[in-house]
Length: 294
Image (cartoon, rainbow, N blue to C red):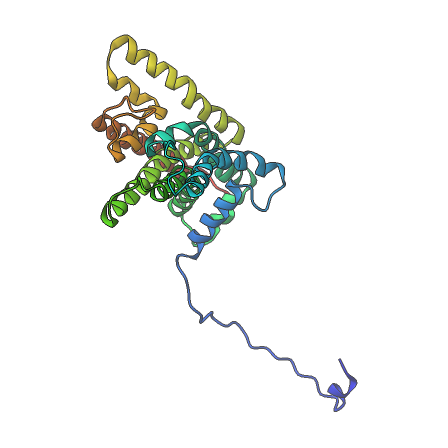
């Protein structure tokens, strides 16, 4: 500071006191921030390189076949490749089940797992964000990631079908099919999110949560299939989240045959409602009664 400022020997203390914020207050800002941060963490953004490997593999496995189909349909759209047979939308979802299972087992434990142990949950709740808002915001981020791999490849198949001239007949049919694709992607991601979030919130340990999710996918599915075969009762398959989740696209698209299409449509929606309700209740109850240090 130059010397001539205090040349007259005067000094003043400028105290403006406490001033209330008079700008625009966005009530939706905390949930939106949590959703964006959850998506970034689930996909490994802004983290070390090793954290990006498995999410990248899952997304790549889900999209790569559909991208190849779009490329082939574009190259031979003049009719030179008349033998290009595109899979049905529900069949494609079933064919990328491994990628969907991988992301389901990884994303929710990564998005939720560290907040309780590191004290970040208390920091979240010190903001205008409530416990219910925190749970819902994180669930939206998990469902958004899973929705990318459940609906995204189907949209590419729709593009390939349209290029080949074997897509919907008119604009209205095209719009209906688009809505079915989005609905099937949302339905699958919602039921998988409900289960993975419930397990993660209940265990409060990322490694244990991943192990339990894998057991639910593989072991419980095998047990349910065995019971259904021995007793000849379809209802046992409701215990299998894989059967329920991957029966949703055939039910929505109206396909008679899907990779997991052994469940009837009423049974599929019954299982969907049961899994979402039970898992959602477990996650909500656990978080509501969790002691948090702020």
